[in-house]
Length: 276
Image (cartoon, helix red, strand yellow):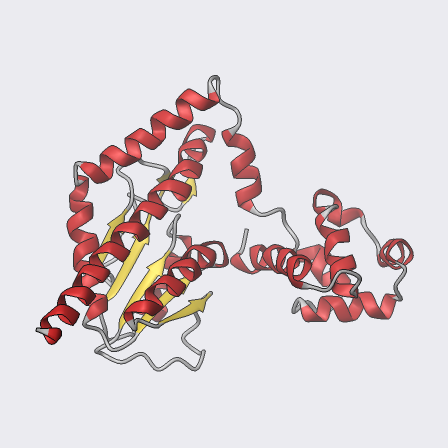
């Protein structure tokens, strides 16, 4: 599904979590989230009657979600890939043992520095540390992880710009002494925006789980696994989907943990030298 559709689903979740208890946003977002498997069969009259709001209110609600109408929302809505993906992971003969075994494989990948993963992370941290501005280009699905680390890096006087669903037409002035990092688990986002990236004159890094995707625009591609999870940018079997779920959760977290450590080491080292 498109990142825009995934964004709509996450926006519904955010509206529900952040809206006042009896607000229209709370009521309507909950209504649609509870019926996400049946969105196509809902009509605006049902929504108006069951939520005790006017049809005009429903229409205004979807304008807030950047949809021209309720019909536009229905036509665009698709159940997010993450939901179906997590569900398929349950289809294991021995869930606990298989899950733990795969986590061990991920730990081994990092511990043994396969594909020079730790060296690449250290180099990325160094590039970030000496860059003027740091731009993370994310899909809606990877934004949450990057936002979590954005907050942690503030203590090192490192402020990130997170650009969701990057378009070159957006008012972003990326200079040669900046750094761009594309966070794209499947590399779908990376492949989608690669033409725009070719016009950028600064180091560009890709962080991904896709071992098949390559493009010369990237200064380096940091692959968080050596498993073949995708055929170019598409899932190739239900078995690889199970692996992908675990890698998205654990390999990505380890990447950010080690990136944080390497950056903190540089920051503290410079701070200590100035105090001496």
